[in-house]
Image 1 (cartoon, rainbow over the protein chains, first blue to last red):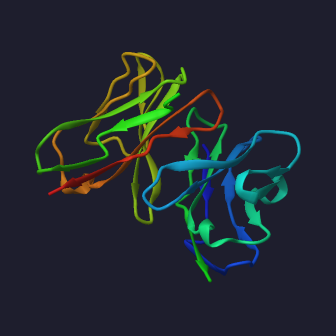
Image 2 (cartoon, each protein chain N blue to C red; image 1 turned 90 degrees about the horizontal axis):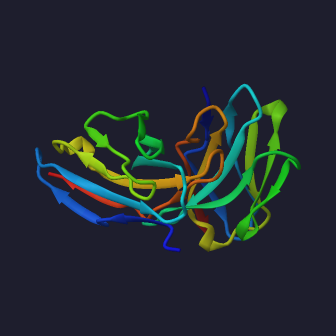
Image 3 (cartoon, each protein chain N blue to C red; image 1 turned 60 degrees about the vertical axis):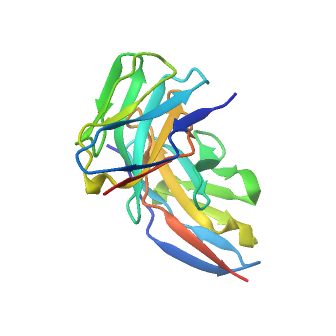
Amino acid sequence: AQSVTQPDIHITVSEGASLELRCNYSYGATPYLFWYVQSPGQGLQLLLKYFSGDTLVQGIKGFEAEFKRSQSSFNLRKPSVHWSDAAEYFCAVGGGSYIPTFGRGTSLIVHP
Amino acid sequence: NAGVTQTPKFQVLKTGQSMTLQCAQDMNHEYMSWYRQDPGMGLRLIHYSVGAGITDQGEVPNGYNVSRSTTEDFPLRLLSAAPSQTSVYFCASSDLQSEQYFGPGTRLTVT
């Protein structure tokens, strides 16, 4: 079975500050990992994905994530947050079943 | 390509009514799934399909039915709506072990 935990329900940062959103997964083999973003009232958009290879993955909108097998983590980072980054962020893990499993999401609040 | 489309965007039902949420994709994906999104609960999988004629239950299947007669379409049926089914519903499609493409969602209110 596969599962994913996003420990932070809300994160508040100031515009221009760096960001790290945490994601921990549980899966016995090498997982497929995803980060999605959901703006208010919208559907989900893929930010980045990890399947294999380089453990540092670059995504859209200046986001990156690092797969750390020893820590079962896939944290999302951005060096400088913009007000437009305020949204809900979802981590998902796949590999153990046909459909990925999603975390409960982290709501990002950006202060000016 | 339209991607994944969902209709309607909004719906209000009375308790006990039935309805079908439509989902279609034009990417020839084998896998399709339905999720519901509630505050603080993330996305919970209702039903999914791994190909035409093949469906299976997800985490929260009670009160919902699905069928998959074609690769493109994956409708979700509410048999007898209950207030607990008030939610935002998302349909998604994908290839095996690849990212999912999501529709814009259907916001359902059951009174």
